Image (cartoon, rainbow over all chains, first blue to last red; front, side):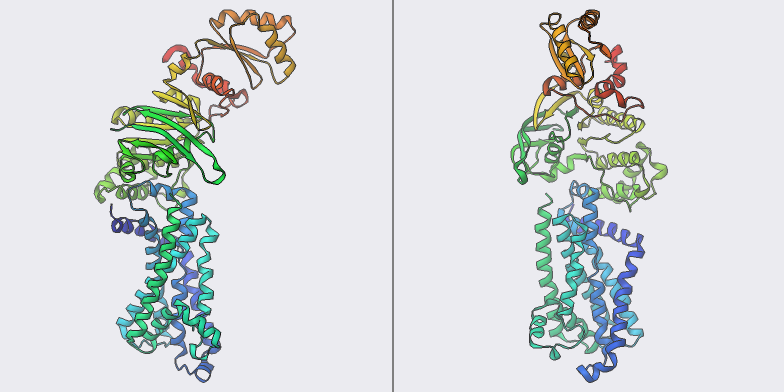
Length: 250
Length: 345
Protein backbone atom coordinates (compact mmCIF):
# COMPACT_ATOMS: atom_id res chain seq x y z
CA UNK A 1 0.00 0.00 0.00
CA UNK A 2 1.73 3.17 -1.12
CA UNK A 3 1.14 6.58 0.39
CA UNK A 4 -0.63 8.03 -2.67
CA UNK A 5 -3.15 5.20 -2.98
CA UNK A 6 -3.88 5.18 0.75
CA UNK A 7 -4.18 8.97 0.77
CA UNK A 8 -6.66 8.79 -2.12
CA UNK A 9 -8.83 6.22 -0.31
CA UNK A 10 -8.80 8.21 2.92
CA UNK A 11 -9.47 11.49 1.12
CA UNK A 12 -12.61 9.97 -0.41
CA UNK A 13 -13.73 8.90 3.04
CA UNK A 14 -13.08 12.37 4.49
CA UNK A 15 -14.88 14.09 1.62
CA UNK A 16 -17.85 11.79 2.09
CA UNK A 17 -18.02 12.95 5.72
CA UNK A 18 -17.91 16.59 4.66
CA UNK A 19 -20.72 16.04 2.17
CA UNK A 20 -22.77 14.21 4.79
CA UNK A 21 -22.61 17.18 7.16
CA UNK A 22 -23.41 20.07 4.80
CA UNK A 23 -24.58 22.31 7.62
CA UNK A 24 -21.01 22.46 8.96
CA UNK A 25 -19.87 23.99 5.70
CA UNK A 26 -22.55 26.65 5.46
CA UNK A 27 -20.72 28.75 8.05
CA UNK A 28 -17.42 28.29 6.27
CA UNK A 29 -18.95 29.93 3.21
CA UNK A 30 -21.29 32.46 4.79
CA UNK A 31 -18.93 33.96 7.40
CA UNK A 32 -16.17 34.97 4.93
CA UNK A 33 -18.84 36.37 2.61
CA UNK A 34 -20.40 38.28 5.49
CA UNK A 35 -17.07 39.89 6.45
CA UNK A 36 -16.40 40.58 2.77
CA UNK A 37 -19.73 42.38 2.37
CA UNK A 38 -19.45 44.33 5.63
CA UNK A 39 -15.86 45.45 4.99
CA UNK A 40 -16.61 46.55 1.44
CA UNK A 41 -19.79 48.27 2.61
CA UNK A 42 -18.03 50.12 5.43
CA UNK A 43 -14.72 51.12 3.84
CA UNK A 44 -15.23 50.65 0.11
CA UNK A 45 -16.22 54.24 -0.69
CA UNK A 46 -13.36 55.87 1.25
CA UNK A 47 -10.75 53.30 0.21
CA UNK A 48 -9.84 55.07 -2.99
CA UNK A 49 -9.27 58.41 -1.24
CA UNK A 50 -7.72 56.90 1.89
CA UNK A 51 -5.55 54.13 0.42
CA UNK A 52 -5.59 54.78 -3.29
CA UNK A 53 -7.34 51.46 -3.94
CA UNK A 54 -9.67 51.78 -6.92
CA UNK A 55 -11.27 48.34 -6.83
CA UNK A 56 -11.74 47.71 -3.12
CA UNK A 57 -14.20 44.86 -3.81
CA UNK A 58 -11.48 43.05 -5.79
CA UNK A 59 -8.96 44.04 -3.09
CA UNK A 60 -11.09 42.37 -0.40
CA UNK A 61 -12.25 39.25 -2.23
CA UNK A 62 -8.95 37.32 -1.71
CA UNK A 63 -9.28 38.00 2.04
CA UNK A 64 -12.60 36.16 2.00
CA UNK A 65 -11.00 33.35 -0.03
CA UNK A 66 -8.14 33.00 2.46
CA UNK A 67 -10.55 33.15 5.35
CA UNK A 68 -12.54 30.25 3.90
CA UNK A 69 -9.40 28.29 3.01
CA UNK A 70 -8.21 28.49 6.61
CA UNK A 71 -11.45 26.99 7.93
CA UNK A 72 -10.27 23.39 7.56
CA UNK A 73 -11.59 20.85 10.01
CA UNK A 74 -9.02 18.08 9.54
CA UNK A 75 -7.61 18.63 13.02
CA UNK A 76 -11.02 18.38 14.63
CA UNK A 77 -11.98 15.35 12.53
CA UNK A 78 -8.76 13.51 13.26
CA UNK A 79 -9.14 14.22 16.98
CA UNK A 80 -12.63 12.76 16.81
CA UNK A 81 -11.11 9.68 15.15
CA UNK A 82 -8.57 9.46 17.98
CA UNK A 83 -11.30 9.73 20.61
CA UNK A 84 -13.56 7.17 18.89
CA UNK A 85 -10.69 4.72 18.40
CA UNK A 86 -11.03 4.72 14.60
CA UNK A 87 -7.63 6.38 14.26
CA UNK A 88 -6.00 3.30 15.80
CA UNK A 89 -7.98 1.05 13.49
CA UNK A 90 -6.40 2.93 10.59
CA UNK A 91 -2.95 2.67 12.18
CA UNK A 92 -3.43 -1.10 12.36
CA UNK A 93 -3.63 -1.33 8.58
CA UNK A 94 -0.51 -1.40 6.41
CA UNK A 95 -1.37 2.09 5.11
CA UNK A 96 1.54 4.49 5.69
CA UNK A 97 0.83 6.55 8.80
CA UNK A 98 1.32 9.81 6.97
CA UNK A 99 -1.47 8.82 4.57
CA UNK A 100 -3.91 8.77 7.49
CA UNK A 101 -3.12 12.48 7.98
CA UNK A 102 -2.78 13.33 4.30
CA UNK A 103 -6.25 11.94 3.60
CA UNK A 104 -7.78 14.47 5.99
CA UNK A 105 -5.74 17.50 4.91
CA UNK A 106 -6.25 16.69 1.22
CA UNK A 107 -10.00 16.70 1.82
CA UNK A 108 -9.64 20.11 3.49
CA UNK A 109 -7.65 21.25 0.48
CA UNK A 110 -10.44 20.18 -1.89
CA UNK A 111 -12.97 21.91 0.35
CA UNK A 112 -10.87 25.10 0.37
CA UNK A 113 -10.70 25.06 -3.44
CA UNK A 114 -14.48 24.61 -3.76
CA UNK A 115 -15.17 27.42 -1.28
CA UNK A 116 -12.65 29.64 -3.09
CA UNK A 117 -14.36 29.01 -6.43
CA UNK A 118 -17.74 29.90 -4.93
CA UNK A 119 -16.45 33.08 -3.25
CA UNK A 120 -14.50 34.19 -6.32
CA UNK A 121 -17.55 33.45 -8.47
CA UNK A 122 -19.75 35.55 -6.19
CA UNK A 123 -17.03 38.21 -6.30
CA UNK A 124 -17.26 38.30 -10.08
CA UNK A 125 -21.00 38.77 -9.81
CA UNK A 126 -20.57 41.79 -7.51
CA UNK A 127 -17.95 43.35 -9.73
CA UNK A 128 -14.49 42.34 -8.51
CA UNK A 129 -13.38 41.61 -12.06
CA UNK A 130 -10.50 39.21 -12.65
CA UNK A 131 -7.44 40.70 -14.32
CA UNK A 132 -5.69 37.37 -14.96
CA UNK A 133 -8.74 35.89 -16.70
CA UNK A 134 -10.10 32.33 -16.43
CA UNK A 135 -6.65 30.77 -15.99
CA UNK A 136 -5.92 33.22 -13.22
CA UNK A 137 -9.25 32.28 -11.63
CA UNK A 138 -8.21 28.61 -11.67
CA UNK A 139 -4.81 29.48 -10.24
CA UNK A 140 -6.44 31.40 -7.39
CA UNK A 141 -8.63 28.37 -6.67
CA UNK A 142 -5.52 26.14 -6.73
CA UNK A 143 -3.65 28.53 -4.48
CA UNK A 144 -6.53 28.45 -1.99
CA UNK A 145 -6.44 24.64 -2.12
CA UNK A 146 -2.69 24.60 -1.47
CA UNK A 147 -3.05 27.06 1.41
CA UNK A 148 -5.95 24.96 2.79
CA UNK A 149 -3.70 21.89 2.70
CA UNK A 150 -0.75 23.37 4.57
CA UNK A 151 -2.79 25.41 7.05
CA UNK A 152 -5.03 22.46 7.86
CA UNK A 153 -1.94 20.49 8.93
CA UNK A 154 -1.61 22.98 11.82
CA UNK A 155 -4.86 21.78 13.35
CA UNK A 156 -3.90 18.17 12.73
CA UNK A 157 -0.61 18.64 14.57
CA UNK A 158 -2.35 20.27 17.56
CA UNK A 159 -5.06 17.62 17.54
CA UNK A 160 -2.68 14.68 17.32
CA UNK A 161 -0.38 16.02 19.98
CA UNK A 162 -3.07 16.85 22.51
CA UNK A 163 -5.96 14.58 21.53
CA UNK A 164 -8.20 17.56 22.29
CA UNK A 165 -10.83 18.86 19.83
CA UNK A 166 -10.49 22.33 21.37
CA UNK A 167 -6.74 22.38 20.69
CA UNK A 168 -7.36 21.18 17.14
CA UNK A 169 -9.47 24.28 16.53
CA UNK A 170 -6.72 26.61 17.75
CA UNK A 171 -5.33 26.73 14.22
CA UNK A 172 -8.34 28.76 13.07
CA UNK A 173 -7.85 31.20 15.96
CA UNK A 174 -4.20 31.45 15.02
CA UNK A 175 -5.22 32.49 11.53
CA UNK A 176 -6.83 35.74 12.69
CA UNK A 177 -3.71 37.43 14.09
CA UNK A 178 -1.88 36.36 10.95
CA UNK A 179 -4.63 37.87 8.82
CA UNK A 180 -4.75 41.13 10.79
CA UNK A 181 -0.96 41.41 10.63
CA UNK A 182 -1.16 41.27 6.82
CA UNK A 183 -2.36 43.95 4.39
CA UNK A 184 -5.85 42.47 4.54
CA UNK A 185 -7.78 45.73 4.86
CA UNK A 186 -5.32 48.33 3.56
CA UNK A 187 -2.11 48.29 1.53
CA UNK A 188 1.14 47.81 3.45
CA UNK A 189 2.28 51.30 2.35
CA UNK A 190 -0.15 53.02 4.74
CA UNK A 191 0.81 50.88 7.76
CA UNK A 192 2.69 52.18 10.82
CA UNK A 193 6.31 51.01 10.71
CA UNK A 194 5.89 48.24 13.33
CA UNK A 195 2.84 46.84 11.49
CA UNK A 196 4.62 47.09 8.18
CA UNK A 197 7.49 45.05 9.66
CA UNK A 198 5.05 42.45 11.04
CA UNK A 199 3.39 42.20 7.62
CA UNK A 200 6.74 41.79 5.91
CA UNK A 201 7.71 38.74 8.00
CA UNK A 202 4.18 37.29 7.93
CA UNK A 203 3.88 34.59 5.21
CA UNK A 204 0.12 35.16 4.91
CA UNK A 205 0.94 38.60 3.45
CA UNK A 206 2.57 37.00 0.41
CA UNK A 207 -0.22 34.48 -0.14
CA UNK A 208 -2.73 37.33 0.00
CA UNK A 209 -0.71 39.56 -2.32
CA UNK A 210 -0.29 36.70 -4.81
CA UNK A 211 -4.05 36.13 -4.92
CA UNK A 212 -4.70 39.86 -5.10
CA UNK A 213 -2.32 40.24 -8.02
CA UNK A 214 -4.41 37.76 -10.03
CA UNK A 215 -7.58 39.73 -9.34
CA UNK A 216 -6.27 43.28 -9.67
CA UNK A 217 -3.16 43.23 -11.86
CA UNK A 218 -3.05 40.12 -14.06
CA UNK A 219 0.04 37.91 -14.26
CA UNK A 220 2.74 39.05 -11.84
CA UNK A 221 5.38 36.32 -11.75
CA UNK A 222 7.20 37.77 -8.75
CA UNK A 223 4.05 38.02 -6.61
CA UNK A 224 2.99 34.48 -7.56
CA UNK A 225 6.43 33.07 -6.81
CA UNK A 226 6.45 34.74 -3.39
CA UNK A 227 2.93 33.41 -2.75
CA UNK A 228 3.84 29.81 -3.56
CA UNK A 229 7.11 30.20 -1.65
CA UNK A 230 5.15 31.35 1.41
CA UNK A 231 2.75 28.41 1.07
CA UNK A 232 5.72 26.03 0.81
CA UNK A 233 7.28 27.65 3.89
CA UNK A 234 4.09 27.34 5.92
CA UNK A 235 3.81 23.73 4.68
CA UNK A 236 7.38 22.91 5.69
CA UNK A 237 6.63 24.10 9.20
CA UNK A 238 3.14 22.62 9.65
CA UNK A 239 3.94 19.26 8.06
CA UNK A 240 7.09 18.88 10.20
CA UNK A 241 4.98 19.70 13.23
CA UNK A 242 2.45 17.08 12.10
CA UNK A 243 5.15 14.44 11.59
CA UNK A 244 6.42 15.13 15.10
CA UNK A 245 2.88 14.91 16.52
CA UNK A 246 2.21 11.71 14.57
CA UNK A 247 5.24 10.05 16.14
CA UNK A 248 3.71 10.67 19.55
CA UNK A 249 0.77 8.49 18.46
CA UNK A 250 2.99 5.41 18.11
CA UNK B 1 4.43 -19.29 11.20
CA UNK B 2 1.01 -18.14 12.40
CA UNK B 3 1.89 -18.13 16.08
CA UNK B 4 2.97 -15.53 18.59
CA UNK B 5 6.16 -15.50 20.60
CA UNK B 6 7.51 -13.07 23.17
CA UNK B 7 10.69 -13.04 25.20
CA UNK B 8 11.03 -10.76 28.19
CA UNK B 9 8.48 -8.34 26.79
CA UNK B 10 8.39 -5.25 28.99
CA UNK B 11 6.67 -1.90 28.90
CA UNK B 12 7.47 0.87 31.32
CA UNK B 13 5.47 4.05 30.79
CA UNK B 14 7.65 7.12 31.05
CA UNK B 15 4.94 9.07 32.83
CA UNK B 16 4.96 7.80 36.38
CA UNK B 17 7.42 5.00 35.59
CA UNK B 18 4.64 2.43 35.69
CA UNK B 19 5.89 -1.04 34.75
CA UNK B 20 2.70 -2.15 32.96
CA UNK B 21 4.17 -5.35 31.51
CA UNK B 22 7.10 -6.90 33.28
CA UNK B 23 9.16 -9.31 31.25
CA UNK B 24 6.58 -11.75 29.95
CA UNK B 25 7.37 -14.78 27.81
CA UNK B 26 4.77 -16.21 25.46
CA UNK B 27 4.62 -19.06 23.01
CA UNK B 28 1.25 -19.28 21.31
CA UNK B 29 1.18 -22.06 18.74
CA UNK B 30 -0.38 -21.63 15.32
CA UNK B 31 -4.09 -22.44 15.36
CA UNK B 32 -4.41 -22.11 19.11
CA UNK B 33 -6.97 -20.06 21.01
CA UNK B 34 -4.99 -18.38 23.76
CA UNK B 35 -6.66 -16.42 26.55
CA UNK B 36 -4.93 -13.77 28.57
CA UNK B 37 -6.86 -13.55 31.80
CA UNK B 38 -6.46 -10.73 34.26
CA UNK B 39 -8.05 -7.79 36.01
CA UNK B 40 -8.26 -4.25 34.72
CA UNK B 41 -4.80 -2.73 34.82
CA UNK B 42 -3.01 -6.08 34.92
CA UNK B 43 -1.20 -5.46 31.61
CA UNK B 44 -3.42 -7.32 29.14
CA UNK B 45 -4.15 -4.42 26.83
CA UNK B 46 -0.60 -3.09 26.95
CA UNK B 47 0.61 -6.53 25.84
CA UNK B 48 -1.84 -6.57 22.94
CA UNK B 49 -0.81 -3.06 21.91
CA UNK B 50 2.84 -4.07 21.84
CA UNK B 51 2.11 -7.26 19.89
CA UNK B 52 0.04 -5.34 17.33
CA UNK B 53 2.66 -2.59 16.78
CA UNK B 54 0.63 0.19 18.41
CA UNK B 55 3.10 0.50 21.26
CA UNK B 56 6.85 0.08 21.24
CA UNK B 57 8.17 -2.28 23.91
CA UNK B 58 10.62 -0.83 26.43
CA UNK B 59 12.61 -4.06 26.25
CA UNK B 60 12.26 -7.66 25.15
CA UNK B 61 11.22 -8.96 21.77
CA UNK B 62 8.08 -10.34 20.20
CA UNK B 63 7.16 -12.01 16.93
CA UNK B 64 3.73 -12.32 15.35
CA UNK B 65 3.39 -14.82 12.49
CA UNK B 66 7.18 -14.93 12.46
CA UNK B 67 7.67 -11.17 12.10
CA UNK B 68 9.44 -9.05 14.68
CA UNK B 69 6.95 -6.46 15.94
CA UNK B 70 9.56 -3.68 16.08
CA UNK B 71 11.60 -4.46 13.00
CA UNK B 72 8.79 -5.50 10.64
CA UNK B 73 5.63 -3.75 11.81
CA UNK B 74 4.13 -3.62 8.31
CA UNK B 75 4.32 -7.40 7.95
CA UNK B 76 2.84 -7.85 11.41
CA UNK B 77 -0.10 -5.61 10.45
CA UNK B 78 -0.67 -7.57 7.25
CA UNK B 79 -0.66 -10.86 9.17
CA UNK B 80 -2.76 -9.77 12.13
CA UNK B 81 -6.38 -8.75 12.57
CA UNK B 82 -7.11 -6.68 15.64
CA UNK B 83 -10.30 -5.82 17.48
CA UNK B 84 -9.43 -3.53 20.35
CA UNK B 85 -11.39 -3.10 23.54
CA UNK B 86 -12.75 0.27 22.43
CA UNK B 87 -14.73 -0.39 19.26
CA UNK B 88 -13.26 2.19 16.94
CA UNK B 89 -15.75 2.97 14.21
CA UNK B 90 -16.57 6.03 12.18
CA UNK B 91 -20.21 6.90 12.82
CA UNK B 92 -20.65 8.74 9.53
CA UNK B 93 -19.81 5.71 7.41
CA UNK B 94 -22.05 2.75 6.73
CA UNK B 95 -20.93 -0.76 7.66
CA UNK B 96 -20.36 -1.64 4.01
CA UNK B 97 -18.28 1.49 3.39
CA UNK B 98 -16.19 0.87 6.49
CA UNK B 99 -15.43 -2.74 5.56
CA UNK B 100 -14.67 -1.87 1.94
CA UNK B 101 -12.30 0.92 2.98
CA UNK B 102 -10.60 -1.35 5.50
CA UNK B 103 -10.21 -4.05 2.83
CA UNK B 104 -8.77 -1.61 0.32
CA UNK B 105 -6.28 -0.28 2.86
CA UNK B 106 -5.12 -3.88 3.21
CA UNK B 107 -4.50 -3.91 -0.53
CA UNK B 108 -7.61 -5.65 -1.88
CA UNK B 109 -8.90 -4.42 -5.23
CA UNK B 110 -12.23 -2.58 -5.41
CA UNK B 111 -14.07 -5.74 -6.57
CA UNK B 112 -12.41 -7.99 -4.01
CA UNK B 113 -13.12 -5.48 -1.27
CA UNK B 114 -16.80 -5.36 -2.25
CA UNK B 115 -17.08 -9.16 -2.26
CA UNK B 116 -15.24 -9.58 1.04
CA UNK B 117 -17.35 -6.90 2.72
CA UNK B 118 -20.51 -8.65 1.52
CA UNK B 119 -19.29 -12.03 2.82
CA UNK B 120 -18.38 -10.66 6.23
CA UNK B 121 -21.60 -8.69 6.60
CA UNK B 122 -23.49 -11.95 6.03
CA UNK B 123 -21.30 -13.84 8.48
CA UNK B 124 -21.83 -11.33 11.30
CA UNK B 125 -25.52 -10.95 10.49
CA UNK B 126 -25.46 -7.30 9.48
CA UNK B 127 -26.55 -7.63 5.83
CA UNK B 128 -29.89 -5.96 6.42
CA UNK B 129 -28.25 -2.98 8.14
CA UNK B 130 -25.19 -2.76 5.91
CA UNK B 131 -26.12 0.57 4.38
CA UNK B 132 -27.15 2.32 7.58
CA UNK B 133 -24.76 4.80 9.15
CA UNK B 134 -22.89 3.37 12.12
CA UNK B 135 -24.11 6.12 14.43
CA UNK B 136 -27.42 4.25 14.55
CA UNK B 137 -25.89 0.87 15.49
CA UNK B 138 -26.31 -0.77 18.91
CA UNK B 139 -23.30 -1.83 20.98
CA UNK B 140 -23.64 -5.47 19.93
CA UNK B 141 -23.86 -4.57 16.24
CA UNK B 142 -20.79 -2.37 16.56
CA UNK B 143 -18.84 -5.15 18.25
CA UNK B 144 -19.78 -7.63 15.50
CA UNK B 145 -18.82 -5.16 12.80
CA UNK B 146 -15.52 -4.45 14.55
CA UNK B 147 -14.80 -8.17 14.54
CA UNK B 148 -15.64 -8.34 10.83
CA UNK B 149 -13.29 -5.40 10.17
CA UNK B 150 -10.49 -7.28 11.92
CA UNK B 151 -11.00 -10.21 9.55
CA UNK B 152 -11.33 -8.36 6.30
CA UNK B 153 -7.85 -9.32 5.05
CA UNK B 154 -8.03 -12.96 6.20
CA UNK B 155 -5.43 -12.59 8.96
CA UNK B 156 -3.43 -15.53 10.24
CA UNK B 157 -3.51 -14.21 13.78
CA UNK B 158 -6.46 -12.52 15.42
CA UNK B 159 -6.08 -10.31 18.49
CA UNK B 160 -9.25 -9.68 20.44
CA UNK B 161 -8.99 -7.32 23.39
CA UNK B 162 -11.91 -8.07 25.68
CA UNK B 163 -14.19 -8.95 22.78
CA UNK B 164 -17.39 -9.34 24.78
CA UNK B 165 -17.08 -6.60 27.38
CA UNK B 166 -20.38 -4.80 27.63
CA UNK B 167 -22.30 -7.25 25.46
CA UNK B 168 -25.57 -8.85 26.46
CA UNK B 169 -25.57 -12.64 26.88
CA UNK B 170 -27.01 -13.29 23.42
CA UNK B 171 -24.44 -11.16 21.62
CA UNK B 172 -21.68 -12.64 23.76
CA UNK B 173 -22.69 -16.16 22.76
CA UNK B 174 -22.74 -15.24 19.07
CA UNK B 175 -19.28 -13.67 19.30
CA UNK B 176 -17.98 -16.83 20.98
CA UNK B 177 -19.49 -19.01 18.28
CA UNK B 178 -17.89 -16.89 15.61
CA UNK B 179 -14.47 -16.95 17.28
CA UNK B 180 -14.71 -20.72 17.54
CA UNK B 181 -15.71 -21.08 13.89
CA UNK B 182 -12.90 -18.95 12.47
CA UNK B 183 -10.43 -20.78 14.64
CA UNK B 184 -11.66 -24.24 13.65
CA UNK B 185 -12.56 -23.62 10.02
CA UNK B 186 -9.82 -21.23 8.97
CA UNK B 187 -7.11 -22.21 11.45
CA UNK B 188 -6.71 -18.62 12.64
CA UNK B 189 -4.63 -18.26 15.79
CA UNK B 190 -6.66 -16.32 18.34
CA UNK B 191 -5.14 -14.28 21.15
CA UNK B 192 -7.88 -12.92 23.35
CA UNK B 193 -7.71 -10.93 26.53
CA UNK B 194 -10.53 -11.22 28.96
CA UNK B 195 -11.52 -10.62 32.51
CA UNK B 196 -14.33 -13.13 32.22
CA UNK B 197 -13.43 -16.56 33.55
CA UNK B 198 -16.18 -18.23 31.61
CA UNK B 199 -14.89 -16.79 28.37
CA UNK B 200 -11.38 -18.09 28.97
CA UNK B 201 -12.66 -21.44 30.12
CA UNK B 202 -15.00 -22.02 27.21
CA UNK B 203 -12.90 -20.71 24.37
CA UNK B 204 -9.26 -21.17 25.16
CA UNK B 205 -6.92 -24.07 24.50
CA UNK B 206 -4.46 -22.35 26.79
CA UNK B 207 -4.85 -19.68 29.44
CA UNK B 208 -2.26 -17.37 30.93
CA UNK B 209 -3.13 -15.47 34.08
CA UNK B 210 -1.50 -12.05 34.15
CA UNK B 211 -1.23 -10.20 37.45
CA UNK B 212 0.55 -6.86 37.89
CA UNK B 213 2.29 -7.22 34.54
CA UNK B 214 3.58 -10.72 35.09
CA UNK B 215 2.32 -14.09 33.96
CA UNK B 216 1.67 -15.96 37.17
CA UNK B 217 0.16 -19.17 35.77
CA UNK B 218 -0.19 -20.73 32.37
CA UNK B 219 -1.65 -23.92 30.98
CA UNK B 220 -4.82 -25.42 29.59
CA UNK B 221 -7.92 -24.54 31.64
CA UNK B 222 -8.14 -28.17 32.78
CA UNK B 223 -4.47 -28.29 33.76
CA UNK B 224 -4.77 -25.06 35.72
CA UNK B 225 -7.81 -26.33 37.56
CA UNK B 226 -6.16 -29.70 38.19
CA UNK B 227 -3.18 -27.89 39.67
CA UNK B 228 -5.36 -27.17 42.69
CA UNK B 229 -5.64 -30.94 43.14
CA UNK B 230 -8.69 -30.75 45.36
CA UNK B 231 -12.35 -29.89 45.64
CA UNK B 232 -13.35 -26.48 46.88
CA UNK B 233 -15.71 -26.13 49.82
CA UNK B 234 -17.05 -22.61 49.97
CA UNK B 235 -18.54 -21.55 53.31
CA UNK B 236 -20.47 -18.33 53.00
CA UNK B 237 -20.14 -16.45 56.28
CA UNK B 238 -20.77 -12.81 55.49
CA UNK B 239 -18.44 -10.01 56.49
CA UNK B 240 -18.40 -10.60 60.28
CA UNK B 241 -14.69 -11.10 61.14
CA UNK B 242 -15.42 -12.85 64.42
CA UNK B 243 -17.56 -15.48 62.65
CA UNK B 244 -14.81 -16.04 60.13
CA UNK B 245 -12.16 -16.39 62.87
CA UNK B 246 -14.37 -18.81 64.78
CA UNK B 247 -15.00 -20.87 61.67
CA UNK B 248 -11.33 -21.08 60.79
CA UNK B 249 -10.51 -22.19 64.33
CA UNK B 250 -13.29 -24.73 64.41
CA UNK B 251 -12.45 -26.26 61.08
CA UNK B 252 -8.68 -26.41 61.50
CA UNK B 253 -8.62 -29.82 63.26
CA UNK B 254 -10.93 -31.19 60.59
CA UNK B 255 -8.98 -29.85 57.63
CA UNK B 256 -5.53 -29.46 59.09
CA UNK B 257 -3.67 -30.27 55.90
CA UNK B 258 -6.03 -28.33 53.65
CA UNK B 259 -5.32 -24.94 52.21
CA UNK B 260 -7.71 -22.23 53.35
CA UNK B 261 -8.45 -18.82 51.96
CA UNK B 262 -10.82 -16.10 53.05
CA UNK B 263 -12.24 -13.76 50.43
CA UNK B 264 -15.45 -11.83 49.87
CA UNK B 265 -17.10 -13.12 53.05
CA UNK B 266 -16.36 -16.74 52.17
CA UNK B 267 -14.03 -19.29 53.69
CA UNK B 268 -12.64 -21.55 50.96
CA UNK B 269 -11.25 -24.96 51.88
CA UNK B 270 -9.28 -26.88 49.29
CA UNK B 271 -9.76 -30.52 50.26
CA UNK B 272 -9.86 -33.99 48.74
CA UNK B 273 -13.30 -35.67 48.63
CA UNK B 274 -15.03 -32.46 49.55
CA UNK B 275 -18.55 -33.88 49.31
CA UNK B 276 -17.85 -36.34 52.11
CA UNK B 277 -16.49 -33.59 54.33
CA UNK B 278 -19.35 -31.12 53.98
CA UNK B 279 -21.64 -32.65 56.70
CA UNK B 280 -18.77 -32.58 59.20
CA UNK B 281 -18.01 -28.96 58.31
CA UNK B 282 -21.61 -28.03 59.02
CA UNK B 283 -21.61 -29.92 62.34
CA UNK B 284 -18.37 -28.27 63.47
CA UNK B 285 -19.68 -24.82 62.61
CA UNK B 286 -22.93 -25.56 64.50
CA UNK B 287 -20.88 -26.63 67.48
CA UNK B 288 -19.17 -23.25 67.76
CA UNK B 289 -22.36 -21.34 67.01
CA UNK B 290 -21.49 -20.17 63.50
CA UNK B 291 -24.42 -20.36 61.11
CA UNK B 292 -23.16 -20.17 57.54
CA UNK B 293 -25.49 -18.76 54.90
CA UNK B 294 -24.48 -21.54 52.54
CA UNK B 295 -21.97 -24.34 52.21
CA UNK B 296 -21.22 -25.59 48.74
CA UNK B 297 -18.73 -27.97 47.27
CA UNK B 298 -17.48 -27.83 43.71
CA UNK B 299 -14.72 -28.87 41.42
CA UNK B 300 -12.13 -26.08 41.13
CA UNK B 301 -12.73 -23.32 38.63
CA UNK B 302 -10.39 -20.82 37.03
CA UNK B 303 -11.61 -18.40 39.66
CA UNK B 304 -10.24 -20.74 42.31
CA UNK B 305 -6.96 -20.82 40.42
CA UNK B 306 -6.97 -17.03 40.27
CA UNK B 307 -7.88 -16.75 43.96
CA UNK B 308 -5.16 -19.16 44.97
CA UNK B 309 -2.50 -17.32 43.00
CA UNK B 310 -3.46 -13.71 43.61
CA UNK B 311 -5.24 -13.96 46.95
CA UNK B 312 -8.48 -12.51 45.65
CA UNK B 313 -11.27 -13.18 43.18
CA UNK B 314 -11.24 -11.90 39.65
CA UNK B 315 -13.93 -9.47 40.75
CA UNK B 316 -15.63 -8.91 37.44
CA UNK B 317 -19.19 -9.75 36.73
CA UNK B 318 -19.81 -10.91 33.21
CA UNK B 319 -23.02 -9.67 31.66
CA UNK B 320 -24.66 -12.94 32.61
CA UNK B 321 -28.27 -13.86 33.13
CA UNK B 322 -30.50 -11.73 35.32
CA UNK B 323 -30.30 -12.58 38.98
CA UNK B 324 -26.66 -13.52 38.98
CA UNK B 325 -25.55 -10.07 39.93
CA UNK B 326 -26.13 -10.27 43.65
CA UNK B 327 -24.39 -13.60 44.13
CA UNK B 328 -20.81 -12.50 43.56
CA UNK B 329 -18.25 -13.62 41.05
CA UNK B 330 -17.98 -17.19 42.14
CA UNK B 331 -21.71 -17.70 41.87
CA UNK B 332 -21.66 -16.07 38.45
CA UNK B 333 -19.07 -18.49 37.29
CA UNK B 334 -20.96 -21.38 38.78
CA UNK B 335 -24.20 -20.45 37.11
CA UNK B 336 -22.53 -20.00 33.77
CA UNK B 337 -20.53 -23.18 34.01
CA UNK B 338 -23.18 -25.59 35.10
CA UNK B 339 -23.12 -27.66 31.85
CA UNK B 340 -19.40 -28.23 32.24
CA UNK B 341 -19.86 -29.37 35.79
CA UNK B 342 -22.06 -32.09 34.42
CA UNK B 343 -19.13 -33.33 32.45
CA UNK B 344 -19.20 -31.80 28.96
CA UNK B 345 -15.52 -31.07 28.95
